Image (cartoon, rainbow, N blue to C red):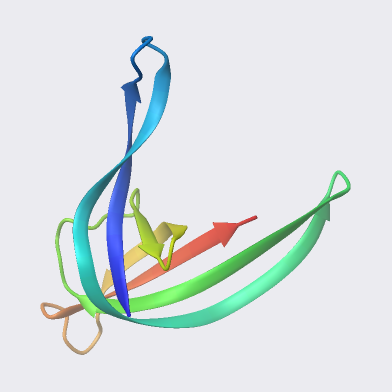
Length: 100
């Protein structure tokens, strides 16, 4: 699969109101994606679901924990970026979560 790494920055619209802008960092990155966990919970009567995935892709020092990854039109928050145990200068492992 192919993924795009993005960051969220604050900008303003034509009327000066604050808006969130998604800026691509690296686009069209080949990646191996694995679903790790999923869970549901109820908070204040609202059902919340959380999914966690692990992504293995080529190493890039540009990707940080504060960034996001877009996969098939869905945006996931990156929670952990770590070099691969066996090939730390070639690959990295990324844990990302989505809540809905």
